[in-house]
Image (tube, rainbow, N blue to C red):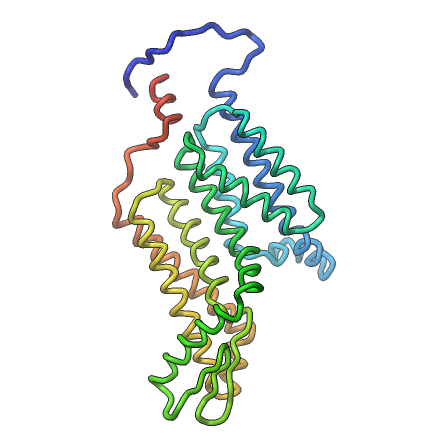
Length: 308
């Protein structure tokens, strides 16, 4: 591949110093290590609980109770970081690494998810980040949101969010149920005298974060570049997840058998599969109907092209 000549002078390098490519690789390895440690610490309690509850190999086969999508997200993010053609580490990188390390020492999973969030925000906003760096950071941000921050938001604003979900469900039921439907906060009273209360776990927020994570893993695993159309795809995922969640909760308003089926393990597994299928379909549609960028337009990538 040919390109413009590099106008910078060729300065000699001492035998003991690392070249630009080696320095870039060291930085990428360090970022990947910090991501990995933060994720492992965040899931540590789940892993220990899974090992205590069943034999190790059984826990391993069940991915220690961690979602397969979350495992795939971590693998995809680490792979993108290691393939990055970014620049060598700077003083700012060292400061962020020390801050992340300090958060990892907090003896609570909140410290690990906060560390993951800080590192991902830094990577997604730094000026010389590559597309791969930013996509990996977005994946880890979505993972942190799905596994931790959405739950924190529900603890703080749960009544407001659940009331909004209840309003959507009540509006949906009004088209299929004869009689007056009364909603009060997160409680829906049906004409036959039964009531349906939306609690944490029936909310849309956690499912939206999970759906966006699914979309990121599939879409960006196939096309590791950002385009403006991705915004519309993410909005489509969010709207689809909210619609699916509203239908699921509305189905619980039927007879007791329907409630047990939809609310139980079978219904939860079916909902997760449908959510994954929806996110995957939108991701495939996005990839197939949008142009592929010619290459990484980051400054670092340009430098590498000049060296070839």
